[in-house]
Amino acid sequence: MIKIIMLLVAAALSCVECYFLPISSLLIKILLFVLFIIANVILEVGLFFIVVFLLGLPINTKKETTHYSKFYRYVLYVSTKICLSLFSIKVKVEGLEKIPQNTNFVILYNHISNLDTMVMDVYLHKYPLVFVAKKSLFKIPFFGKMLHRIGYISLDRGNIRQELKAIYQGIDFLNKNECSVGVSPEGTRNFTNQTLLPFKVGCLHLATETKRPIIISVIKGTNEVKHNLFFKKHQVSFKIVDVIDYNIYKDFSRKELAKIIENKMLEELLK
Image (spheres, rainbow, N blue to C red):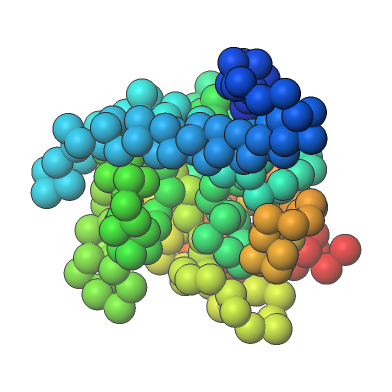
């Protein structure tokens, strides 16, 4: 829909521009009309990134984010929705009705692409939500600053002290009811032929220490988007598989809980 709106706006502007051109040849006007559409679409995209850049200027990345930002989350939602539309990504979403409405939560997902959290962000935009994300994402121009200001939690893999700090930051957000937290128990993107990588059970502290519901989700197809990125439609699926309340998992050890979650994810991914 966003792509169609952009094309319609570009076409309308091109009509106006061609109307005032002192050219009598219909063929030349048609060619110019097409060129103007392309130029106007590029201009729209450029203006969009300029706006994002300007909104990011006041953000100080050296200052620790202690509160979730609803405003910058909305900016990210709009930005991400535009990007998904430009990439022709069509998402099949299932199970959103299972998400609890009266409390924040910890959402777990399999990790196969950098697009995973982008897809989830768009379809969970009604919920205050941040993700535990690798440190390099915060260095992306424009968007890195927004991630920082929203409250995304930076994870420096291999740095145990920083990993603990990230977990405690997520626990703090949950306990203060600032927002929900998303994390991949695999700990990194899965580039292997395995369906899932071994789970990092430490991330389950986010739930066990805050007594929040655990939402188990799976995502498929995002790892294929990089092939013919702009020249074909890409089908992606995002599904909420199950929700485990604290009174159900409280008597399990973290290893037992991780195994339950892993089995539920595998069952869905292997369908």
